[in-house]
Each structure stands twice: as C-alpha cells, then as structure tokens.
Length: 504
Image: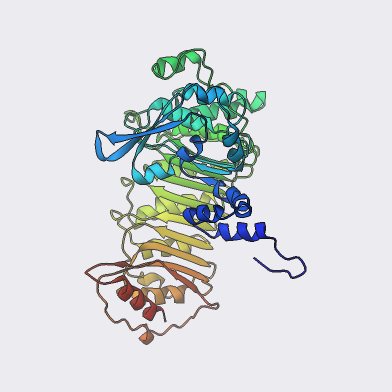
C-alpha cells in the first residue's frame, strides 16, 4: 500500500486496508468501532464465508438446533430449521449482506470439527431460489461434502448456491457411507454435467458419448422419497456455467464414466484449471478389466484454455497412464499436481515408467509440478526429485508427504539442472541431512527459492562449512523454513534457534 501526498487515502480506504490484514475476530471488533469502520469493513468480512450457518441465519425464522451425535460422542449434529417465515418474512437483512459474498466454502468449519449438518425445510430454500440466485455475485463455490451427508443433501447443497457469476467451482463429493454410481440421476456431478450439456450447441451435444440429463421428477422421488415429491422441480433450472475458469469434480476409477465427463467438461471455453478427484469404486472391476481404449477426439474445441491439471487419489498406474494419454486434455498443460491413493505405490523403475514418461511425452510444456510421496513408496524424496528435475524441464517442483529425506543419489552429484527456480519439500527434514542441501545447491545453480520442513529429535551440532561447494548458485536463494516439529522434550525455542544457526 503506497502513500501519495497529492492524493491522500480516505478513512474508509485505510479501514479496508487494516481489515484486510486482520483475523476474523479482529475484523469484527474493528467493524463495531464506529459507523465509518463498519461500512468499510463489512464487505471484507462477508467476502469469504466458510460457515454456512452465518449465511442462513440471515434468513427470517431460521433456527439452528445443536445436539450430540449419538454415534460419535464428542461430535455435534447441527440442524437448520426453516418454516413459513422464510417465505413470508422480510429478507432485507439477508439481501444486505448476500451480494457481498464472493467466495463460499459450505462445510469448511464442519470438516475441521467433524460435526454434521442437516436441513429441515429444503422446500423453503428452493422456493426462494426460483426467484433468482441466492448469491448473485458469487465467484468461488467450494462444496466438500461431509461423510454422513445423505444422498439428497449432497444433491441439494451442490445446487443451492450455483450462480451465473461463478468462475470457480469445486464439487468434491468425497467419501460416503454408501457406494454411489457417479452416473445416477441423484449424483451431484451428474447434475452438473447435465446442466453443462444443456448449454452446448445441438451438434456438440448430440455427439457426446453419454447423454447426461437433469434428473426426472419420478427418478428423484424414487431415490429420495422422504425428501422429494414429484412436482417440486427444484433442479430444473440450473444456471448456465459456461464461464467457469476452474472446476473440480469427483470421478470414478472406471475410465468410461471419466471419459464421458471429460467429453462434456472439455467444451468449457474458458476452463483453465481442472481437478479430478478419484473416489472409491462403487462396483467391482469386471473380470476382463477396464477398457482403457477410450480416447478424446482431436478437436481444437476441447480444452482450448486448459493449462493446469490436478489429480487426487489416482487409484493405480493404469489410470494415470490413460489420463496422460488423452492428448486434448494434457497437451497444453503447464502446471500439474499428482496425488495417488495409498494403494498406488511405486519403486524407482515404476516411477520412470508410470509417472515421468507419460508426463514428458504428453505435456511438453510442463514447467510446474507437485507430486505426493508416501511412506510405502520404495523411492525417497531426493531420488524422486532428481528423477523429475533431470528428466523434465521443470521450473518449479514440490514434493509433499510424510516420508523422511533419503540420501542424495550419487549418480546425480556431478550433474547440474539449470532450469529449476523453485523447490519445495514438505517431507520432514532432519538437520543431520544438512549435507544433502549442499548437494542440491551444487545441482541447482539457478535456484531462487527453497522451502523445507525440519523435524528435530536432538540438538546435534552440524558443520556444513567443511563441504566445498564447487558450483555455487548464481543468484541468492530465499529459504523458507516451516516451524520445526520438536520431539524428545525439546522446546520450540531451542529447535527454532538450532535451525537458525544452521541456516546462518
């Protein structure tokens, strides 16, 4: 924030800047100070809503009842109750704040506490929705479903706050108590794909391999008889979401439904980032195995703007190789994130064959990559990093996971990688591995940023000064160190001071 004496900042501008630097509680106290601060701060407070209760309590007549969860003694079930007042009451208070909401994470606070949420009175919310979007200026919607949400609640929450203004939608259907076919009419992703299909030109829509359709009234009433009755028509008017720039959906490990979904999503003209999270399989794999021969048509209209691809919980190497064989999906990717299921373990040879080769061949423009490393993997942090750095011309690399550091591979100690600029390790780093950082500095002459996460068990003196660095970095390296994990009765202050002394 710069100061111009010829154009001094006004009090509301100063108030907004101060509020932007504060926590939620501090912002609230700041807003209560006076009318001017209130008016300047409220748009910042309501810009991001991460607890759906805060929003729904603005609706006339809404009550929130809390009771212990009988199946989980320490958790709470929150029931949001609506009645006729939601239709007859004054919504002035709601509409004063709702237009300020730009980002909504419906269940963020409940995911942290592991509480459950239920709604009594969906009818009143969807009746109001027929008058127009409940959040008309919403730009980002994140719906990470709770484990115990019913099938109907998942569908309702995913549709309730959709708005033509959306640019980012993350529809994480997550895990569920019951196995659900992702192409059932009551599946939230299926509802989204049906809405996207409706926005396509007739020729493109007719060419789709699977015709997604909005669920019929009869189908909804049959699948969800206690929550839905024929004639409600709650899900018939999903807004046009053609302007989405970022999308995240949960998909099946079966390649056929994934292919069907990609054929729809690929027509979003502005889509820049796609996240595919692979959920648990709802049925056993057929005896002959899955058919991985599905390919996307080579069309310039498919994924014209896609540059980032995030994969989560990839079940096995077959699925990964197949995804990276879909040229229209991956050919223009410059940034990727790869997370595997815990069953998808690898050794060094498998990492070359199943991860590096498909990415190198399918995405020649890939420069930014994040990969997860697991304890059960038979390849270490540094070996994986070296294989990626020296085989793919990356500028930024991140390795995540809880596996501890290994020894820097000897075969790479005389080799340099000039293109890498940024390196992040979130695996626990033990200071006795300090020598490995020296090898990294030698191998990466143009490294500008390094992130590490130390774990301390003893305060043992380390002397990196005796190691000769033959190829020093050509630029200063910024090193960020996450607060160290302290064990064996060491204090945080001792650990932090020890790390500082090593860095110096």
